[in-house]
Length: 342
Image (cartoon, rainbow, N blue to C red; front, side, top):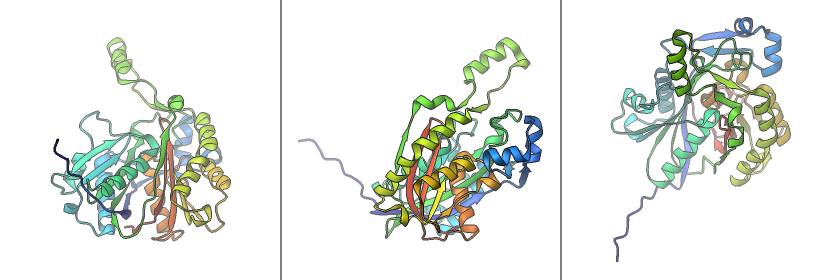
């Protein structure tokens, strides 16, 4: 008879214990980005709902923005760094294939020996990381997990590309996930659709770029983020209602129980369509942080969560639906209890 392996037992319930964010100092208007793409403030507002966005300076890095947001999350959660045993960083703009950003972030925060790794799920990355964190705590693998969504998209976009230059921006949001007496993070509904992989992508892979350098030298054009906006819009408008309803159903709730909806801040028109088709109650708070922050990919959900709390449109303890989608195309949704914030 073979020996039987021991199993860990974790918390019955999990919750977001605290939230912190970092917004770069520089505010960029539509007029500033409109010139190189032969556009206008009116066109950008109509097309995307964006009025301003934040661009990071050279010294505002993936690491520094993550550390600042994380310190806020830890403070609002009342959790010390030595109580965190795992760090998950969701990002698509840490421009080193190795090492990951997470170990250095954990070390700068003062953690010793914590597991730390990055995940790449595009704009859905934060909701993916939140699902992993909740499962780690419930399984007993970790006691408290720090989840970070961070992007410096200005390092990856061509400011003359009419499809991306006005949309994307920079920032970071972080949450602490830990055990709770009551359910605070509902079951996650997630998936992907690889038939739409081309809709949001890097326009050439690194091997193509290296070959171009060998052939053209200094005339080689670096890879940039590119997007087929119409394809993404159509996919989101027709595919995400079921994901949202499934997340609400799996949480054991009805749409009238949702007090706040926090979608990935991809496009103002997509946000309006999603709220309309779900027929949310009139007093349900709808995150629209894209107006002031732009599309920050994996950082957008925690940034939008903070904006709702800061403006008093939602309160800690409210029931909120999170839904995110992006490159892959990947998507994830879950119902959560709104956390404390700093």
